[in-house]
Image (cartoon, rainbow, N blue to C red; front, side, top):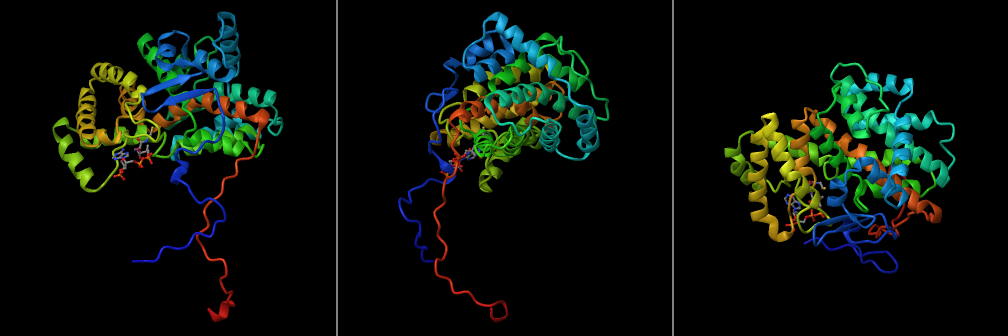
Length: 388
Ligand SMILES: CC(C)(COP(=O)(O)OP(=O)(O)OC[C@H]1O[C@@H](n2cnc3c(N)ncnc32)[C@H](O)[C@@H]1OP(=O)(O)O)[C@@H](O)C(=O)NCCC(=O)NCCS
């Protein structure tokens, strides 16, 4: 057996991989109650926010400002966002050039970076200026994602229409059609439940980046880069690909046995914090059924439910249950949205959470700087190159 290397780190060497359970800061933005499967934004349950009728804009206001808006405040906030939705021509040109040949999350990351290049106040790092940029990005990311979907389908970019709500306009800019009221309502709900989720990987990435007092565009690009990965936001895409690969509800068990034999993780299950059902999956389950039946893709929902039963029977004891990404893909697919656009939709929502966290941390900013336990040599003898 190989001898374990001594740890050279001076001081406490107790750590958990992936910073599991580590506390980074204090926050009053959201609470992920992993044991009971609850998600609270500023004291309000996501169920109440979804049913409240204030839409994604109300949730974005709540997360960023800290309080629920009064009617006049919400109207002013919506008007402000609607007036910021347009993207400059160079960004449209960029999307036209790169979107056909790269993943939409790369297009989004690059377009956000370009917006920073075009903002002369990019480097003014104050709460006031970062709030201004956050508002613009919350308004412009849906436009970038809508344009990306259009260009990838060989269609022309549709400019925003400030008379529509953010989610209605987003759907219109993606599909060229006015969504029916139920589709608009569900997209709004999807944006609400994806808007914020504690100190997840993309939020932490964005906050770490911002803690060097760099510009907000760079921090949001870091968040987008992290969200793209299959262990985080990219799981929604991977989950629908799993359902498509299974193809037929009758072969679900066979697929799962093979996945288990290969010790393959099943996408859309498990979570670092939830040891109970993810409350967002609970909200999405009946909606996925409704939309799949409506779109004639009921077999995908049936596969999802069979896979859920198999995984929960096998791993539920370890606290492995469906997460938010398990049902969202079935819904977006039924809405006619391309699979690789699912994670960008997550970003359309999460910009509110990223912004709120960064703005909360900024006034009393301290550079994030953890350490690693050094397990390498300390007294290696240098050998000249010709003598090695
Ligand atoms: C989200 C995720 C990264 C959390 O990971 P984590 O906190 O590091 O949890 P671990 O990987 O340590 O999992 C604990 C145990 O459950 C198992 N497990 C976790 N998620 C699993 C999954 N999706 N499928 C099968 N087994 C899973 C692990 O293999 C591990 O088993 P072990 O104790 O025998 O080693 C992980 O559950 C995962 O990769 N899920 C799939 C991707 C996904 O859906 N991501 C979206 C999250 S919202």
